[in-house]
Amino acid sequence: MTHIAMPAVDEAVIGRRDEIVAGLVAILGAEHVIATEDERRAYETDALTAYRAVPLAVVLPGSTEEVSKVLAFLNGTGAKVIARGAGTSLSGGALPSEDAVVLGLARLNRIVDIDYANRVARVQTGVTNVNITNAVAGQGFFYAPDPSSQLACTIGGNIAMNSGGAHCLKYGVT
Ligand SMILES: Cc1cc2nc3c(=O)[nH]c(=O)nc-3n(C[C@H](O)[C@H](O)[C@H](O)COP(=O)(O)OP(=O)(O)OC[C@H]3O[C@@H](n4cnc5c(N)ncnc54)[C@H](O)[C@@H]3O)c2cc1C
Image (cartoon, rainbow, N blue to C red; front, side, top):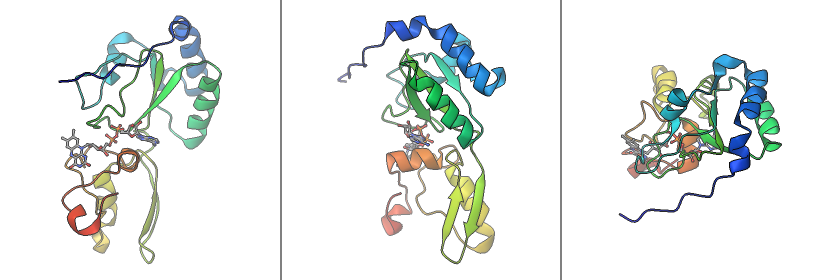
């Protein structure tokens, strides 16, 4: 197997970890900032497990406003930011680096509204693929792009990866 080179890490950012974590806790509260090494390790890879790096921290914002505040803060720190839905990417898309903060989007899992007449659903990024189908199945609808990971994978990850599944033979990918 040919290995890809991981990007160089910024040691100065790693050295400011405590200060960066404190800033994130001030925005989100301690329960939505993952800072211990054991807990951060759960985010060290996606489904491409040949590559791993324990991130600087993991944040779990619960609203668009919180995402915005976190990004504005991190922009001034030099830390990289890696968005993560369910972490089922098979190509390292959600793989962090040691100087990166993982932006875990699983709490943004609300279906905002469904317009059956126009076949449009407005959903937050962390809604799982299968839960979109579950939400509309009662009306005889389904969400066509159906990766085999649909129980876990999120619509944000689906869009970023242009994911597909068996239904895509007929309906096309995301
Ligand atoms: C068992 C298994 C079966 C699979 N079957 C299929 C299949 O049949 N078809 C298929 O196409 N794929 C399949 N996959 C791959 C994977 O499930 C898809 O790529 C899926 O779309 C990833 O979604 P996720 O929520 O896990 O995204 P993640 O892995 O968390 O992230 C994927 C990428 O999306 C980015 N991202 C996520 N959310 C956002 C956001 N809100 N804004 C910006 N970027 C964002 C991440 O940074 C990352 O680059 C499979 C994977 C597994 C493990």
